[in-house]
Image 1 (tube, chains in turn orange, brown, red, cyan):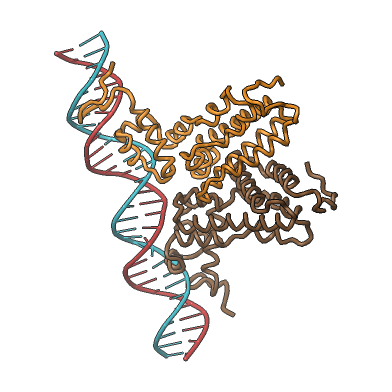
Image 2: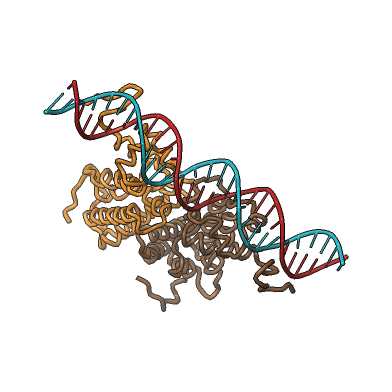
Length: 203
Length: 203
DNA sequence: CCGTAAGCACACAGAGCGGTGTACATAACA
DNA sequence: TGTTATGTACACCGCTCTGTGTGCTTACGG
């Protein structure tokens, strides 16, 4: 096992330079934004020398892309996979986000980088499509008439709530959840008995 | 009448330094973003010396705030005031935006500036609230049961479509319009005789 | 015990940024 | 005719940014 928490000089930790950099990115990029966080500050926060950082990442662009890739936060895999909820409840749970998220980092990255060709922007696009697809899957499971459309609609609601929360400085997710509930009720034929707890709906 | 289109030296135009600066801002801030547009480039595009620009605006911050204030485009005063449409049609027309808008500049400014106290961010907040209020007014006029809620919901849909359009690089307003139609139909009691002109059949 | 890999500290380059200082030119008005 | 606004041209300041170059220090494996 490599030594950990070394003395004041030399290698600080055997493993973890990359991880510390990415972890600091998570915090700083979200708190301050990408453009307003310089590499100097980031390396200081990660307790990593700048030289080391540029040996792990070819540049800030690659670091930003990796930072975005290290997500998946709650919404995608956390909420929609819960088996203790009905599909309908899972769809609605996607709107019960904790107040810890100032703004969806994917939208923020796309706006801040401002270049659709930037690797991070491309990944943001892929991720958003994946979220819509997952929502569509769950919608299908819930028995929606047009699952793809419902998935796209719910994804739009999430993004709208995120953007509006940022601009207004006030939580917009309850509003989005209300719309979502209405859409789901509209889209799912009443025959699907989703309102009963813990029941797998045979499609 | 002051002379216009002067010679190669001296004062280029009698009036218009300010206007040219703001006009160049409209183009460059939208095309490239605020942070990626330097004052040098902006002054060159406006054919205005940097010195003059800083005599009209105390700094870039003030310029950005003024740039945002010089909007109102179509949505707020253009569409919702049309008397040739029923209130319901006016609400839906807010989603028929031309493809000329890459991203709602208010959201972009709030994300790029990243400081809720920035004058431009404050104005963006005010503007978004005003839009929701105008939508609520129209919703009331259309006979909605809870106009404030419907206005807020439609505003969220617009912001969601704007954000999603930016991230996905694909028009998301049709999806938002579909949701809006459903919400409006749900919120307005059938007694309201808006549907009488049925030549436009959506969905 | 020595080589190598990993990392640190620190200075520096090159560019762009917001913003200013200075000297000069022109138009409108007295 | 002269004064005053208004504007130009252009160099310049101080700062921050991304990214390197250089030399030193440590840990670990053979």
